[in-house]
Image 1 (cartoon, one colour):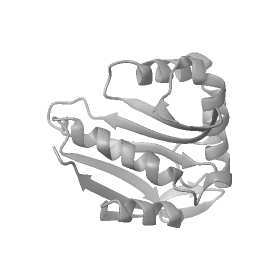
Image 2 (image 1 turned 135 degrees about the vertical axis):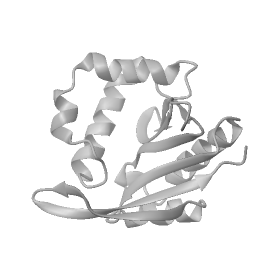
Image 3 (image 1 turned 90 degrees about the vertical axis):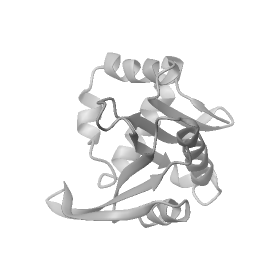
Length: 170
């Protein structure tokens, strides 16, 4: 089952997001340490916003009532760039990878984006180390438009980041 997360999903969200940050530290600009230090109320605000009528959301993929994947949409709010949104927080638990869940999350996300009349483009930043995710994004139609050398640092080592975008069907 795939749906927007809400504040009742806090425990599952916290568990899965922290796992993602710890397992793939170069995949996200957030760090596990920062995530753990963030007050619970901030996490709940994010989940409340996701459940609202806002264009911002965080969707979760559930298997047997267990959260196994995440994908988020963060639309721009400034009028000069409000035709764009950012895909963020994409993750599928490694135990469930290779079963099509990531593709379902991404397809749902792109369907939502194409139904938003205001959106013309979705962009994302992915670590060059995340080979499976990059293949999934490319297969979905995302195109690379830039490479940031040494875009993220972890444990004293630098990793490149790929900038990708896709035009929305609206």
